[in-house]
Image 1 (cartoon, helix red, strand yellow):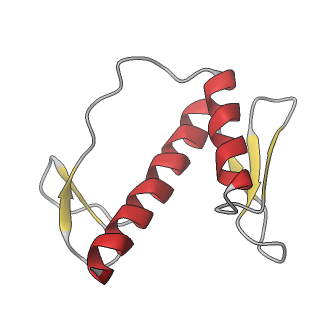
Image 2 (cartoon, helix red, strand yellow):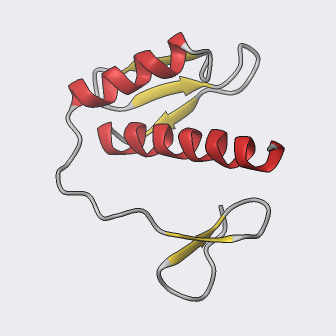
Image 3 (spheres, helix red, strand yellow):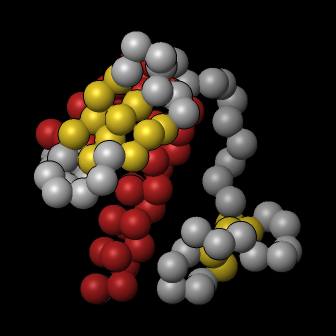
Length: 95
């Protein structure tokens, strides 16, 4: 995603400005990130998501895709939010 010059908005790949999410009220725990990782893999939205001993998450979108390293629980929960947003946006465009 490429940030727009104005604050309070971010852009999606179609170039439509969308408001930023509400600020976090808490820092996601490893357990919360793990629950989201399980859901994403179970619903085949990610091929795999593995918690490394360093606290980083190793994720792969498809079996032959490169492995992506996420910094921690917050990055994993942010990825889940991005995937949810993409699904909702796609559904709205097909209606």
